Amino acid sequence: MHVIYSWLEHLPFTMFQFDFMKNAFLAILLIAPLFALLGTMAVNNKMAFFSDALGHSAFTGIGLGVLLGLDQPLISMLAFGIFLSLVITKVKAANMASSDTIISVFASASMALGIVILAGNGGFSKYSAYLVGDILTITTSDLMLLLVVLVIVYVVWALCYNQLLLVSINRSLAASRGVRVVLMENIFVVLVAVAVMVSIRAIGILMINSLLILPAAAARNVTKSARAYHWLTTIFGLLSGIVGLTVSYYGNTSGGATMVLAAAVLFLVTYPLGKRFR
Amino acid sequence: MQSHNHCGLCSITLKNIQVTSGQDILLDHINLQLHCGELTALIGKNGAGKTTLLKAILGERPYQGEIIYMDHNGMPVTKPKIGYVPQQMDFDRSTPIRVEDFMAAARGKAPVWWKISKKEKVEISNILEDMDCAYLAKRRLGALSGGELQRVLLALATHPVPDLLILDEPVSGVDMVGLDLFYHRVTQLRDRYHMAILLVSHDLSLIRRYADRVVLLDKTVIAQGDAEDVYQTDAFRSVFGYLEEKKESETCT
Image (cartoon, rainbow over all chains, first blue to last red; front, top):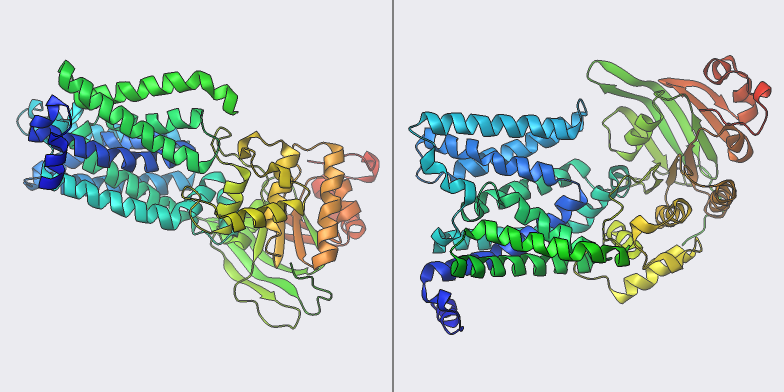
């Protein structure tokens, strides 16, 4: 860690004189590729609304943590996020109602439940930091956790990406090639749930989904192949993260929100170029 | 590809297949034999359970009963290969995936976001060329026309040569010329590799022309045999009415 810190201090940016800025910068280097990988597939699968719902469900996860008297609500956030993602996937598969209705029901219910628990426990305002997040409070152990999650996602991506891609194109075709469709879908939603929950304190409940979806949405405007799509999404994620953090430091703005704005600018710039790649 | 010159005892037997959804019985007592080197057409009205049966065969839906694959020596095939050409591809058409990405992903080699090896690219090109469409390899999957997509899917479904090729309404959105060409290719494949083919279609006149056997489904098998025989049965008439009065060229839905 000291090696990385001293390397950052040598960079000609005044923001790196503070440890919290170094940690914030490193957090971005981990969160951006993590969200880039998952974001490409979430956009392929038209799951933007699903991941948004998952972010909002963090309220209940935090609430449960408070009820259980946990110091860190992360465990309950992870447990509830994984639980909810699997339940939504299961209910969606039953095909009783359209998927956006189902997701909306679960998102609203879990957000409302969380707010009821948190507000009932002596004022909601002390949890409002979770709404917009605070990347400047990231600690070294948070960074380690993010690193572990990133490594896990890369390993799963190396092993399962082709199968996930096939499922996203056509479930029956995937089944005909021996892919275990339901297992793959569950693996993906659990990965999204874990990635969202470990990053929420840095990015915030309101912003988390934008960071998952926007870089991938921008990259698909200007790419044709799966490979280019992946790497450009990663580059866009890193770019919007670093630009956002730098601007927020010098402009004294919210980190998460500034990153999302930077990603939105990338989307707006690439969108008109899209026709050339169609 | 290996060519099978004779099929011997090669067949696929569906024994007493039942599929349920909650309290509803979607399919019951399905007993069928699909022979190699034969194109079997599955017909029936909407909701008769055609797609459900395909999903059961693909392993996408749980079922009761048995599906037994035999090779031409009469030995059971433990890991049968199934080629599948889906009815429609309702994926997001703007997705940045090339045809070769899609093929490589389906063939299950190295993750395509990392790289596709040169050797694999050559193999994919050869597979596509079997259906005269190697030129599509670098095109975006979502930008293909209905006919082009069909050829890519058929090329993929027949490599490696499957024990059973399933075609689910494979020619929706393709013009008449493309339609004939498609079925011509399918019958060529049947003769060349002696594979068993199961086709779901609503086009009764095309089925009369190309299918070796016809199976009429309505929750269970209500008629089977060659097209002429099945089209004469009361069961067929109760589902589709009198075909004779509608002339050859007409299609029923």
